[in-house]
Length: 280
Image (cartoon, rainbow, N blue to C red):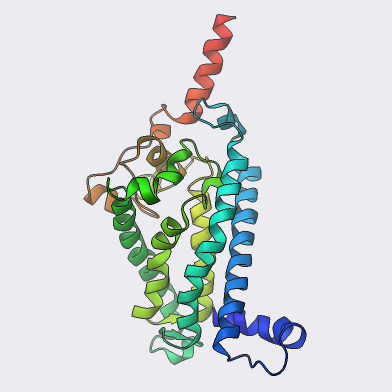
């Protein structure tokens, strides 16, 4: 995150916002700047990606599903909008330690033994590492002693829209994001790659709520997509995974998506229309 902070300092904060007496390395300035950047960036990534997912991918027929709540999209956006600043506070604390040099982030692939070959290795390692941890964190959030206090709010949306992606309790959102933040404290990671991965995971989070249930046939057994995650919202104790189905299969929580078997939410809407047509 220091790349973003440095850019903001050079082009906006130093010349136009902060007085010259407060240096860019001042910890209080860094904390405040990181909070503003994190919160504003969170809103932008959420609203822009969710809006694109809704316009381009989300099948609007799903809004006719009987489990869709009244004013659901407005309620999803409201819930997310209240949570994002609080998640921003928690995330700022992690970013602050990164900016102060406590993480294993580096500037150039030339500093690594394998050069640019480090890139695919790092990306794959990051996704596998976070997929494993998020599965177990997500499953923990469904424990009866935890669920009603933290995670239940996200399951209000039985048939989610892309705007449900960030509509959860702020502690829920932060805890599930921890693996992304922990990784660069444990393993070396290129700063720009980290920034790209951070954007990617936010886009992916929206994508598994976008109601676009199509997955290439060859990837269906492996990828945890919107069809899998929608069934998680519908049936609770299945398909906890983030990117892949591996840990659900190992943890006996995998459920074949109902959309793949002809019994999904969209098929229910179509069947309901056909039934109403026959009645008339």
